[in-house]
Image 1 (cartoon, protein in one colour):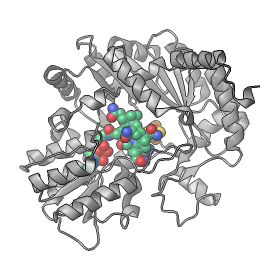
Image 2 (cartoon, helix red, strand yellow):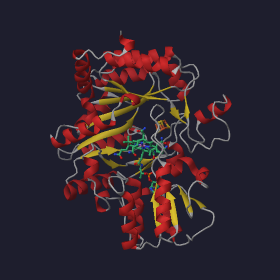
Image 3 (tube, rainbow, N blue to C red):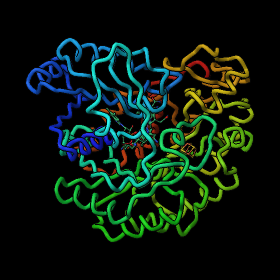
Image 4 (cartoon, protein in one colour):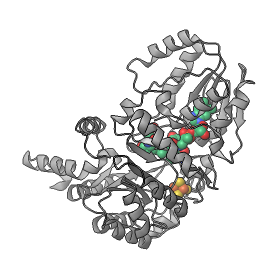
Length: 451
Ligand code: B12
Ligand code: SF4
């Protein structure tokens, strides 16, 4: 759900602009809708929010920017309004995007300050670049009530939770990550009462009962996360929450008990590796020992957990991959899910970019706009994939990106939504895979490496 874009729209509206948000995500004929909206609304400025550069998936890469280029060209052909782009993808790639699109301005940073700039935008031969300064108090801006701008039903039907941000910033320095660059390294927290008010409003006005916290790391700083959990615990029990990115630092019995009391229905744990060598290489700031401690605590609770791993960082070998698989085998509950991303999307100004430049696996002239990935030179992709396929047959709770069949997943989401089953949908992965493996056995469809 486009939280950032709706946030910008709300701020513009508060500044006195007549704003319309056009969400093309679920449109069957996006170009037609775009044309008719431009003709009827006659905008004086057009702002386009770009969230992703691509799907960041090495094994199944899908670029996104070429389709956005088409949309921009279409806007240009129907309107003379100055055109500005912004959003997470632009914040990640920065000025490197300057000559890629035919736009008048590129906005890098937090869109809440857009009203200050919007008046001065003109049609330009060359795009102007604006850098917003970091906003100290994010509470001074209005909340983005997404259903006031777009239809959220198709998102909810696809198992998407309603996004809530409780703070901005991340104080960690993981070598592959852009978040500290997008949101800064100091935490800027929202007032807890304000967050609560937003959730209650969405529940009462729009019957939304499923929320996800989209902070960089939900459980850091832990005192703030505790305060939020204690406040949420007072809400009606049918309102459920997902703790987006969480990590094992400060992951205590006391914290999980609070999550449980506050009706958290899932946790995603972005641990990245079960090998201390790789955790150190990624500069994760925790060790396997802390992961084991967190796993032991989680065994006492029924909250489903998705453990997310990132395979292929600097120093990854088949031995370190085996350490991660052993961690999954020994510590991840059979009813939980272990998800592997293979290969690291390289973004500018990250540690992994520096490593790739030093190793000369990525040339300096690569501006990183096109999907570019790092994979440890100690790994052979074919051998790795074979090993993971064999592992996944024995561990039905294990999945990796290339194995995920988008069409079946969408169908599954729809069924779960229609039957109103507890969410998130991924909690059913182990059962779904067991059925799939059993069916394959019955029909004797074994792939060659198994025999
Ligand atoms: C939470 C999150 C998710 C959640 C979303 C949950 C939900 N219910 O919404 C989940 C886990 C599902 C997810 C999935 C993916 N994500 Co994600 N996600 C994030 C995260 C952590 C926060 C996004 C967010 O909501 N921020 C809060 C809002 C308020 O901020 P914002 O959107 O950036 O908006 C601000 C500015 O960008 C700007 N702005 C926004 N729009 C506009 C428009 C204009 C005109 C202007 C001027 C300004 C402007 O102003 C806003 C307010 O300050 C970001 C990282 C980050 N820290 O930003 C990655 C991030 C957005 N995700 C990313 C990616 C790659 C993905 C996936 C493709 C990963 C994958 N392989 O599956 C998928 C794609 C999902 C999809 N369909 O788009 C990338 C996108 C950039 C890129 N590299 O391509 C990011 C930046 C992380 C990264 N790798 O660096 N993600
Ligand atoms: S991976 Fe997570 S903890 Fe590490 S810098 Fe990024 S957001 Fe912070």
